[in-house]
Image 1: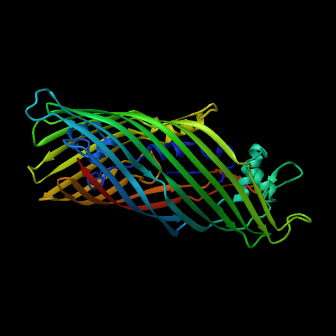
Image 2: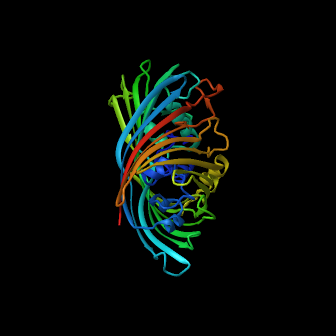
Image 3: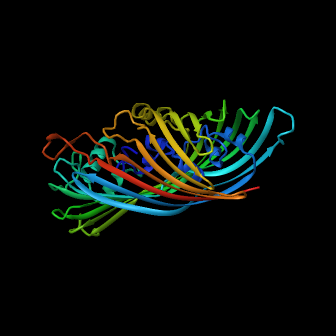
Length: 487
C-alpha cells in the first residue's frame, strides 16, 4: 500500500479513503494447493476446484465429483527503512485458505447428446491475508515535522472540532493558544526520535457458487456467483520522545475495524481445439461491497513538569468511538489463458489478467469526492501474469510457477509490483489425492504517517518541512496442503 496518513486520522477521517479502495481491490490468487503450485495459472486448464474463484468454465472438465479441504501456514516479514534506519517485524498464522465440493454429472460415452457433462460447485477461497506486523523507528532531522507542530498546523487551519486530532493535542496540553488566537507547540527540539508499530489481522474471502458444462468436450462454459466477505482490524501506535523538553514522550494510538460483504458475477469459457491445446477466457464484474468501519483514537502525553498548575504529569484524551457505513465498488477484471499438454507427461499453462484500479469507487450518503479523485489520480491499470508447469511421474506430480502482478500506482517513486515464486508436489490415487504448495512473494510499499507542506515556526520563518516516508519490503511465505476425495 502507499501513503497512509496516521496523524490526520482522528474522527471520521480515519478510514474511507483511496488506501481502503486499493486494499480490497488488489487480491492475490488462491485456490487448491494444485492451483497455488502453478502460481494461479488455471484460466485455460480446468478440472480443478481452483476454477471456482477464477474460471467457472473449468467445472465442465470434471468427470467425477470431488470434495477438497486445505490448510495453510503463513510467514510474513516486513523490513522498514526511514531516514536510513532499518527495522524488521514479522507475523505468522495458521489458516484455512479454502475448501470446496464439486458435484459432476456426465453422460456415458455411448449416450447421445451434444452437452456431455455439467458440474455444480461451491467453494470457499481466501483471496487476501491481512495478518501483518511492521515497525519503523528513527531520529528525524530538524526539518522533520514533529507531531505537536502538525497538530498546531491543523488547529490554525480548522480550529478544534470535536474528535479531531488537534482536539486531542489541545486537551493533553501538547499545543497551546496564544493571546492572538494562534496555536503553537511550545515544546520543540532539534531532533525527535520516533517510531510506529502497525499490526493488522483478518482476511478477505469469497464463497463461489458455480456451474460449468461441456459441449461436445470441445467448448466449456461456466458462470458463478461470488459472495465476498472480509474483516480487517488494524492498530497503529505512533510515539515520540523529547527528553530535552518538558515532554518525556507521547503516544498516539489508532484502532480501526472494518467489516464488509460484497457480491460479484463471473463468466468464463474454455475452448479445446485439440488434445494438445486449451484456450480460456474469464471476466469478473466489479464487486459491490457494503462496509462498516469502527474506530477510535487516543493520545497520551507524559510530562516531566506539569504543563499548568495542578495538572497531572500524565495526560490522556480519547475521541468518542465512531462508526461509519459506506459502499465500495472494486474494478472489473478480465483474464485470458492457454494451456499446452505434453501428452501424458505434463503441461504448461499461462494467464494474463487486466484490472484498472483507478475504477474503484467509494460511495455513501456523504461525499467521497476527494477520495475518488485521489483514486483516479494515484492509481492506474495493471497487467498480472501467471505461468505454471506440471510434470507427471506415474502417480506423482511436480509443479512450479511464477507470477508478476503489476504496480497499481501511476507514479509512487517506488516500484510496487508483486512477484511470486511457487512450487508444489502431489499424489494422485483413484479415489483420493494429496497436494502441497509453497508460495513465496515479495513486494514493496510506501507509507507516510502524516502529510504537510510547510510550517511557520515561532519566529514567523517559513521553511520546507520533511515528512517521514517509510519504504517497506514485504516477504511472504505460504505453505498450503490440500486433501481431496473423488466419488
